[in-house]
Image 1 (cartoon, one colour):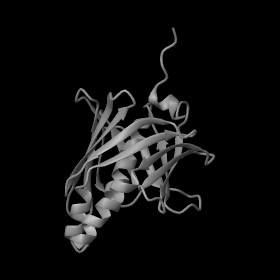
Image 2 (spheres, one colour):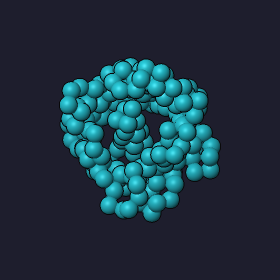
Image 3 (cartoon, helix red, strand yellow):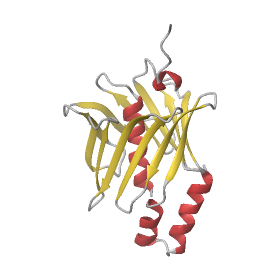
Image 4 (tube, helix red, strand yellow):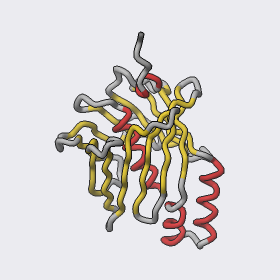
Length: 200
Protein backbone atom coordinates (compact mmCIF):
# COMPACT_ATOMS: atom_id res chain seq x y z
CA UNK A 1 0.00 0.00 0.00
CA UNK A 2 1.49 3.33 -1.08
CA UNK A 3 2.16 5.97 1.54
CA UNK A 4 -0.04 9.08 1.32
CA UNK A 5 1.62 12.06 -0.37
CA UNK A 6 3.47 14.49 1.85
CA UNK A 7 2.42 18.13 2.08
CA UNK A 8 5.40 19.13 -0.08
CA UNK A 9 4.39 16.63 -2.73
CA UNK A 10 0.80 17.91 -2.75
CA UNK A 11 2.10 21.46 -3.22
CA UNK A 12 4.48 20.53 -6.04
CA UNK A 13 7.70 21.12 -4.09
CA UNK A 14 9.21 17.65 -4.37
CA UNK A 15 12.60 17.79 -6.11
CA UNK A 16 12.67 21.61 -6.21
CA UNK A 17 15.54 23.60 -4.71
CA UNK A 18 15.00 27.17 -5.95
CA UNK A 19 11.83 29.19 -5.50
CA UNK A 20 10.35 32.61 -6.13
CA UNK A 21 7.92 34.10 -3.60
CA UNK A 22 5.76 37.00 -4.74
CA UNK A 23 3.69 39.17 -2.42
CA UNK A 24 0.33 39.78 -4.09
CA UNK A 25 0.03 43.51 -3.41
CA UNK A 26 -3.49 43.87 -4.83
CA UNK A 27 -4.96 40.83 -3.09
CA UNK A 28 -7.71 41.63 -0.57
CA UNK A 29 -6.64 38.68 1.56
CA UNK A 30 -2.94 39.52 1.81
CA UNK A 31 -1.60 36.61 -0.21
CA UNK A 32 1.62 35.12 -1.58
CA UNK A 33 2.39 33.18 -4.75
CA UNK A 34 5.14 30.55 -4.56
CA UNK A 35 6.71 29.70 -7.92
CA UNK A 36 9.48 27.47 -9.23
CA UNK A 37 12.56 28.88 -10.95
CA UNK A 38 10.64 28.96 -14.25
CA UNK A 39 7.99 31.23 -12.67
CA UNK A 40 5.32 28.52 -12.76
CA UNK A 41 2.94 28.71 -9.80
CA UNK A 42 3.36 25.88 -7.29
CA UNK A 43 0.96 27.06 -4.61
CA UNK A 44 -0.69 30.11 -3.08
CA UNK A 45 -0.79 31.23 0.54
CA UNK A 46 -4.22 32.88 0.39
CA UNK A 47 -5.37 35.13 3.21
CA UNK A 48 -8.97 35.65 4.28
CA UNK A 49 -10.18 38.96 2.84
CA UNK A 50 -12.65 39.60 5.67
CA UNK A 51 -10.03 39.09 8.37
CA UNK A 52 -7.55 41.30 6.58
CA UNK A 53 -10.06 44.12 6.03
CA UNK A 54 -11.17 43.86 9.65
CA UNK A 55 -7.59 44.16 10.87
CA UNK A 56 -6.91 47.15 8.66
CA UNK A 57 -10.11 48.86 9.82
CA UNK A 58 -9.11 48.33 13.45
CA UNK A 59 -5.72 49.88 12.78
CA UNK A 60 -7.31 52.84 10.99
CA UNK A 61 -9.82 53.36 13.82
CA UNK A 62 -6.88 53.89 16.16
CA UNK A 63 -5.44 56.53 13.87
CA UNK A 64 -2.85 54.38 12.14
CA UNK A 65 0.70 55.06 13.24
CA UNK A 66 2.34 52.96 15.97
CA UNK A 67 -0.85 52.11 17.88
CA UNK A 68 -2.69 51.25 14.68
CA UNK A 69 0.10 48.91 13.52
CA UNK A 70 0.16 47.17 16.91
CA UNK A 71 -3.61 46.65 16.77
CA UNK A 72 -3.45 45.32 13.21
CA UNK A 73 -0.69 42.87 14.12
CA UNK A 74 -2.77 41.62 17.07
CA UNK A 75 -5.58 40.33 14.85
CA UNK A 76 -5.66 36.55 14.40
CA UNK A 77 -5.51 35.43 10.77
CA UNK A 78 -6.04 32.26 8.74
CA UNK A 79 -4.32 31.47 5.44
CA UNK A 80 -5.17 28.67 3.00
CA UNK A 81 -2.37 26.86 1.19
CA UNK A 82 -3.85 26.06 -2.21
CA UNK A 83 -1.98 24.01 -4.79
CA UNK A 84 -1.70 24.91 -8.46
CA UNK A 85 -5.18 23.48 -9.09
CA UNK A 86 -6.73 25.63 -6.37
CA UNK A 87 -7.23 22.76 -3.90
CA UNK A 88 -6.62 23.51 -0.24
CA UNK A 89 -3.81 21.31 1.10
CA UNK A 90 -3.12 22.98 4.46
CA UNK A 91 -3.86 26.00 6.62
CA UNK A 92 -1.52 28.53 8.24
CA UNK A 93 -3.02 29.91 11.45
CA UNK A 94 -1.65 33.11 12.97
CA UNK A 95 -2.22 34.16 16.58
CA UNK A 96 -1.35 37.83 16.77
CA UNK A 97 0.34 40.03 19.29
CA UNK A 98 1.66 43.58 19.19
CA UNK A 99 5.31 42.48 19.25
CA UNK A 100 5.09 38.69 19.09
CA UNK A 101 3.13 36.37 16.80
CA UNK A 102 2.78 32.63 16.39
CA UNK A 103 2.04 30.78 13.15
CA UNK A 104 1.00 27.11 13.04
CA UNK A 105 0.94 25.10 9.81
CA UNK A 106 -1.72 22.37 9.95
CA UNK A 107 -2.79 19.87 7.31
CA UNK A 108 -6.37 19.19 6.23
CA UNK A 109 -6.74 16.59 8.98
CA UNK A 110 -5.87 19.23 11.58
CA UNK A 111 -2.43 17.79 12.39
CA UNK A 112 0.25 20.46 13.05
CA UNK A 113 3.47 20.34 11.03
CA UNK A 114 5.44 23.30 12.35
CA UNK A 115 5.10 26.12 14.90
CA UNK A 116 6.72 29.48 14.07
CA UNK A 117 7.31 32.25 16.62
CA UNK A 118 8.31 35.81 15.67
CA UNK A 119 9.42 38.43 18.17
CA UNK A 120 9.97 42.06 17.25
CA UNK A 121 12.83 44.07 18.72
CA UNK A 122 14.18 47.57 18.34
CA UNK A 123 15.65 49.13 15.20
CA UNK A 124 13.82 46.78 12.78
CA UNK A 125 15.22 43.73 14.56
CA UNK A 126 13.28 40.50 14.59
CA UNK A 127 13.91 37.02 15.95
CA UNK A 128 12.17 34.08 14.31
CA UNK A 129 12.25 30.42 15.23
CA UNK A 130 10.40 27.30 14.13
CA UNK A 131 9.93 24.02 15.97
CA UNK A 132 8.31 20.69 15.19
CA UNK A 133 5.03 19.92 17.01
CA UNK A 134 6.98 18.01 19.68
CA UNK A 135 9.08 21.11 20.43
CA UNK A 136 12.21 19.93 18.63
CA UNK A 137 14.07 22.92 17.11
CA UNK A 138 13.85 23.24 13.33
CA UNK A 139 14.75 26.72 11.98
CA UNK A 140 15.90 30.13 13.20
CA UNK A 141 17.05 33.53 12.01
CA UNK A 142 17.46 36.97 13.55
CA UNK A 143 18.66 40.50 12.88
CA UNK A 144 17.38 43.16 10.54
CA UNK A 145 14.93 41.16 8.45
CA UNK A 146 13.19 44.20 6.99
CA UNK A 147 14.92 43.52 3.69
CA UNK A 148 14.62 40.23 1.82
CA UNK A 149 18.28 39.29 2.39
CA UNK A 150 19.05 36.82 5.16
CA UNK A 151 19.92 33.20 5.87
CA UNK A 152 17.73 30.62 7.57
CA UNK A 153 19.61 28.24 9.87
CA UNK A 154 18.74 24.68 10.80
CA UNK A 155 18.78 23.23 14.31
CA UNK A 156 22.55 22.67 14.05
CA UNK A 157 23.16 26.34 13.25
CA UNK A 158 24.03 25.68 9.61
CA UNK A 159 22.65 27.80 6.76
CA UNK A 160 19.94 25.70 5.12
CA UNK A 161 18.20 28.38 3.01
CA UNK A 162 18.99 31.81 1.60
CA UNK A 163 16.36 34.52 1.17
CA UNK A 164 17.38 37.33 -1.17
CA UNK A 165 16.01 39.91 -3.56
CA UNK A 166 15.04 38.45 -6.92
CA UNK A 167 17.17 39.50 -9.87
CA UNK A 168 14.19 39.13 -12.15
CA UNK A 169 12.15 42.27 -12.77
CA UNK A 170 9.06 41.29 -10.80
CA UNK A 171 7.87 43.69 -8.14
CA UNK A 172 7.76 42.37 -4.55
CA UNK A 173 9.37 39.06 -5.48
CA UNK A 174 12.31 37.36 -3.81
CA UNK A 175 14.27 34.13 -4.13
CA UNK A 176 14.46 31.32 -1.59
CA UNK A 177 17.22 28.85 -2.33
CA UNK A 178 17.70 25.60 -0.42
CA UNK A 179 21.33 25.22 0.67
CA UNK A 180 21.13 21.95 2.62
CA UNK A 181 18.87 18.87 2.66
CA UNK A 182 15.53 19.96 4.13
CA UNK A 183 11.86 19.70 3.28
CA UNK A 184 11.36 23.00 1.40
CA UNK A 185 7.90 23.60 2.85
CA UNK A 186 9.49 24.62 6.15
CA UNK A 187 11.82 27.43 4.92
CA UNK A 188 9.14 28.65 2.50
CA UNK A 189 6.43 29.01 5.16
CA UNK A 190 9.01 30.40 7.59
CA UNK A 191 9.93 33.15 5.11
CA UNK A 192 6.28 33.94 4.30
CA UNK A 193 5.47 34.32 8.01
CA UNK A 194 8.43 36.69 8.44
CA UNK A 195 7.36 38.73 5.42
CA UNK A 196 3.81 39.00 6.71
CA UNK A 197 5.04 40.45 10.01
CA UNK A 198 7.32 42.91 8.23
CA UNK A 199 4.55 44.51 6.21
CA UNK A 200 2.15 44.89 9.14
